[in-house]
Image (cartoon, rainbow, N blue to C red):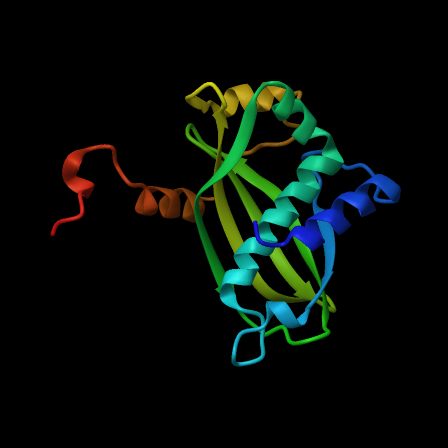
Amino acid sequence: MNLTFRLLLLTLRIRLSRRRLSLWDESRTPFRVTLTDLDPLRHVNNGKYLSLLDLGRLDLMLRSGFWQVVGARGWYPVVAAQTITYKRSLTLGQRFELRSRVLGVDERAVYMEQTFTRHGDVVARAVVQARFLRRTGGTVRPDELLAAAGGAPRDLTLPDWVSAWADAVRISGSGGDRVRP
């Protein structure tokens, strides 16, 4: 997380004025492109998008109260995999919004869809596979997460293409994934 000022601003906004959400709602987090977001080609650096995704997920978890729930249990989220597709550029001074929502779950992880928009047009879209770990060690099962969230009000079955992507990017625990000299 290299966005300390934005993190502070986000938490201040949440405390002062942002309405509460359900974990199953879509959060909409507003931003403006700053000079430090740009690469030498004067548009938002691809790595900056990934950092902003962190803030969008945090916004949803804080506003829904889920951050406090998992924190009290000694759990914390980590990104296991992500993919992002860029459609348009963002340049200095432009306002944009990051929309974040829970897409679904499988037996291993939770999946979120996060979409950058400007004036309602899609700029970039990401799918993020996340797991929650225990501070004492081990992984929190998705069914435990759903129970902590009070259940899900809708079907969280993943779209087929997300399941196929998750299978394709999985790194197995066998020795077959060793880097060879």
